Image (tube, rainbow, N blue to C red):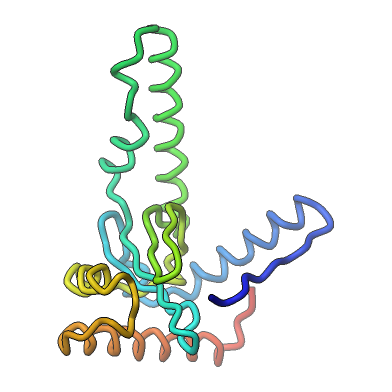
Length: 176
């Protein structure tokens, strides 16, 4: 598995500024296909093609997020605790919707090494079909184990489109 990169900042404000610049850079350089990714969509991230580190994911729907965040609330016996928990769910939903509008998609991401629930920016995603996502899942997220020629062709097309767009962004000279 590729080694993660770590950055160091002199202050938390510097870290937040770095993240804001990255988010702005991603949003202004979105391909129309990336900009269209939304709730319930399937995607691929070509994280490290040379090391075959390809990430597949799905943006959770608003209903799925709310259901997950609300688990157990109805079983709470204390009315005050239940009200506080519902307020927390509403705040979480506001935060996730705001992040979504800023380009950060919430959902599960899977690779042959790991899986995580979290946010991925649209700029790092490329849309795929549910069929390719399911084929990747059946292959245990190992891109080399996807053998169906239709799904291999879709993955290759997604890679070529993503690569062409990424090279155009680099050639534009735009920097975060």
